[in-house]
Image (tube, rainbow, N blue to C red; front, side, top):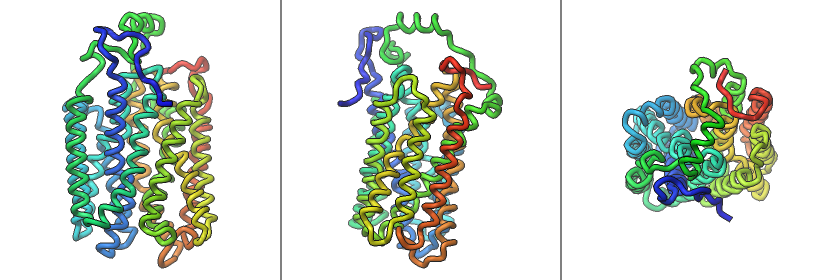
Length: 438
């Protein structure tokens, strides 16, 4: 049964509540953003190494530059939205990301690859986590967990669709033509969404969050007045923010490090098509994991414990991949499934924890800063994990042959993420209501 985001009370002006359309638009935006900027990267890496013969460590470093550029843009994304508007910022970012991916396909010198990485990294994040939060949050408050979960499922579907799609298109028409085709289609889709969906706000349509009537919102505001935003320095002294950011950063570090190399490590075991299928399977499992959490999590659940459990499932996946022999494809797929079940919640749950632990005025800034720090941290994951593979000294590493140190490293980082999340329990206000930082 699909989540129902329809209004619970008639909105002002008696117009149909636009929140579900915003969720659908964010879903498509996420699918394209992650398809270009995250799940395409392992295939780009493999294609560039195969075409140029450059070391994996060099191309992995370009992925690091890709994510660092994105972290810088995320930190300034609220200002970009304020100056240019969310629609124009998103269209410009989609165009920049598409040009960057085309640059990956054309790079003949390392400096050209790094220039392309700057463009692809700086562009895709305008369709990433902070952008999804900016699109969906104005429309939902009480029902934000399900709304964000549904929107973030677009990111997961991006992996289901784009991992095998990139592999198929590159094999059939080449990397350059594939990049041009996918990039153009993505920009056209985002431009349409910007005009039809992202240009709308609750205020412009005379509506309120969750589809409540204006008088209901006024009564709620009178009963629970909004707290003013805390000084930004207070976040750096707040145990809830620090532990939540550390947990998200470490969890995504392990996750992105595995995503960057897992495709290449599975090709010798499963073949090109099989590896593409396995990456799609991981992201399909992420939809199941994220949806199950959104539906089963009680309204007053300890969201930190839920997030820790999601990372624990991923840790089991890392251990399964570490223990899998080269000829045990079933165990490889089991590890991929476990890894995938926790994949989606790494992005969804931290903003929902922030919603519970911080005052409404602090949430956008806290979430954007948390995402920027996490991306700046996991930007180094592909290069670090590439160095771990190189340190193993195996000429042609693969799952079951020389890649065990990589999966062990991922498991240790995932354990650190669990510890950080649990260390922040009790830092929020005892009554369970959002509070100000500091």
